[in-house]
Length: 621
Image (cartoon, rainbow, N blue to C red; front, side, top):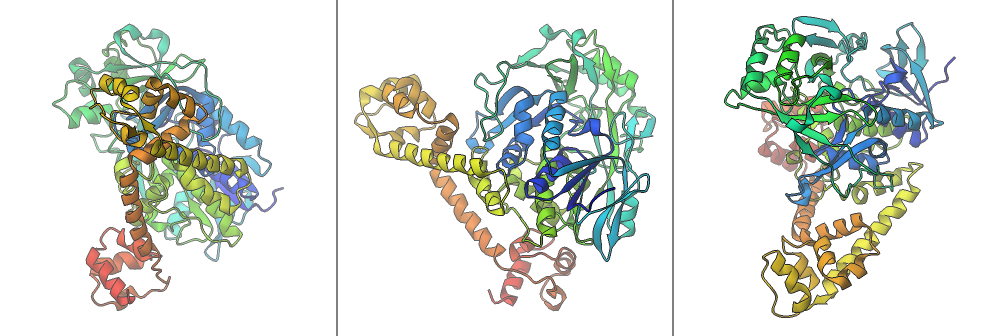
């Protein structure tokens, strides 16, 4: 009935979809197994992609040949570049998306791929022989053979939904939990734990009074996630902002005695940086209001996502409290918010390529590794799918360094430090934020996957090379071209910037914080004429390269120093116990994690700088 597949991907969420297309685009024959074909690429929580650090990840996925950026662009209803008031290392693209269109576009692209087959059924177990994964077992007892398996189970492993004092099994509202896999993995020696996440109520937008809320427009000149020329919408939808108040807080408190968070029924830890509304009121009791983002679910629906009101309180408490929010006085609810507990596996049990240490050719990606967020899941899925293909073809693994990508930072953090709460990416987690800007993803990453032979990136490399050429030409133009006082001083005066008293190179003018290429184009005709032939994205890349040249060079030097530690390899059978001077904690952690390099060893929690020095001396370095 089934051929032997190269890769089976279990779960068709964001991680699963990216894993499937990554392996398929490398040439593997892939089976994507999901409990429900109608919920492929479902946006289980908010209908948005990107945000601070997360937007950088989506752009990196696109640069690596993934589809999340293309699908996000195709389904966007609003685009905003966040943090534009800060330096470019902090700029983060974000789209509000049409939930149904997002899922439909993903399914369309998956079904168009000749290397991807589908099977709709719960997967309850794995075929494991001689510590090697050989396939899957389904709920009705079908065994499907493969050379590797990628698990991307999301919140479905023994998922338990909480609404007030009610609790019931489920991996998502209206969908049953997945059973069997956790129990088998534990029997094989894996360490599992429980985590918690939540979602807010969905409400009827026809019953809201938007005149009582602040309006939030998209960017006037919207950008895109993909480095390709994706089609952007001709118009954008507005989001709105409202606020809770003391009355809302008091109404919510009436349900605290029935809250599964406060009475101990939920044991898993939730995301620290995305707390429920009851948690915010409890932890920040001195605040009399909290911001709520009122976000449309799509072009052709009245459903609204109330971002910031995640809750597992009884549904009648949620309803009464929401009706006291300005603009929500006549609100009708589609469904209440809820919390969900699910199984995850400590990611320290994984290698850098996301393959498990205990079972060969078995890969984990997404929330099974303790992360939260579509973007973090999708990034892991892509890397797991690539490496599953490479493993079955006995090719070298593909691993991103911390200086390569936010995805590299994410995976390095997970496998070396583990996590006891849902891991979310922030720009502050990366040491090389200026190198990892959202405008450099294609420059950094597309050449890496092109070398692997991914079969749909030829045109991408041409675009990257053109971007390089245009940036070099632009930088040369600013370095070589001079400007006179009468040409530039009116613009400088408009920005309260010190005028020049003699001819000066354009690069010196551009280095001023208040000056940008777009401003120069606006005020100086010959600059506008010269730069009209260049793409906006390439001008932005060139401008950042000029303005932050010194910082970029410093980060490159730091990255090179780190790379030198990555080049000091450690054998798989390295005897850490034989080095007497190592601390007891370092020996324990090093023996368990078996780092491949000194660089990786240096990032393990509990391994001190003195331990690293001892290792280097032992290795003759």
